[in-house]
Image 1 (tube, chains in turn red, brown):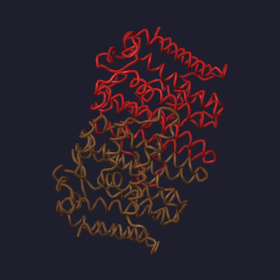
Image 2 (cartoon, helix red, strand yellow):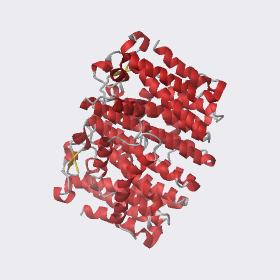
Image 3 (cartoon, rainbow over the protein chains, first blue to last red):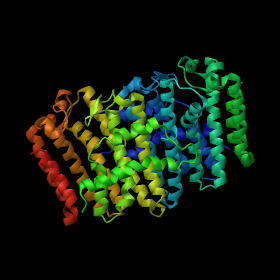
Image 4 (tube, rainbow over the protein chains, first blue to last red):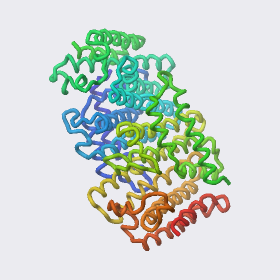
Length: 301
Length: 301
């Protein structure tokens, strides 16, 4: 069994190659502007655990698929995650100037270029998946379904829908658990659920596998967000590696603001149980996913 | 032979249905936030001639393909064009407050929501094409190639690449014909070339057809931009339907600033000839494309 770091290394190596690979396949003017390439790479290489693409690869391995064949889909997921961070940090959105200890994309490249770097990463994610699918045309149907899962998770009823609702509720001072659930499902959980579903599609998996990974992705995603919300209140800056208390200060809708600290701890425990249950059927093979969900719980202790 | 308006009507009717069709296919939370739906529709329905999607449909008809089957791809092209206008109008980009006689998206919905409406339209374009491809899985290979053409035209070495270069040259006061050619090829011509190439792919067309439509799309796209640049200087506001002289005022790199009025007229004539030559092989069947390119020339007289 590979560990998170092993998968992350595969993803990082492939991410280095992709823009050049795409440029090589153009029939005419072949180069993207260096400024675009640089601004996309700046955010893509900003660190991060590569959690989403690694989980996609681990699911492919769990289901007996080919990790190498799935690598471009994993990279596409990371590109989509990265574009969402660039756009989220913009003035008019969260207006953040620092992320992971570095100035945000628009601080370095300007607002206009940052918008385009985000657009470029989203488009490049689909381009990357499409090149991969065209190279495996004998399995076109699996690849089409896999791409559709990614597009759905990233889309207007998924991640983008969650972002819209988040921004709207913050500006309109709307609170309540319905809004919170919609936001956290869309903004956070979808980019775990749908990459896992894409992994299942790439492997031509059964409906049972698709359902199990969907349930895991949902529980894990909501748990990931709940522990994040909890740590913003109970953690130390050293543990968490970022400025704390920011959510409360900005009046952001979080698990803690909706359920309180104790209520959030209960939610975390429930989601932990649900995630473990979802992958129980895989026995030893599900170790990666069990350890991952345990590591989330450890953060809050 | 159908005319531009006939195709545009097909596109408009289908654009009304698509968001609902996408929501119906979700396995879980099914609705996108009304605010997102409204802001996407606000710009999608802002008028415009539906030139790009109509040309895609006309090419499909020319090559003997099924216009109905290609309709979702045509709509995807219009969504991509619309998202690019929303992002282009943002502060940090062109900072425009009016487009086609109506306030721009960010003026109505705010900057953050406008960024997300653009992201939503780009993602929705791919989602729409993927749903269409999954419904025609027996022709998956053609659909994959067609999607890849759209992704390439809209992408980092196509439309987005052109936008980046345009923004950069304007800020850095760079001029010169190399930069101009890159910008006009990427920003304008690519979203004519690649939708036409996608039409050819959808029809499983020959390499000769692919080449002819590529040549036409390139000549037409550059001609479209050149006449636009010319009208900004020589036209009347009444004829053109927008504020004139804006390019010169903002020091924008245009055909007129690079080649002068007479040089641009010569370029227009050359491109007109190239476009006609590209579709000569279709004889009577190419009438739509001949009339379209003639109508561009008529604008400048």
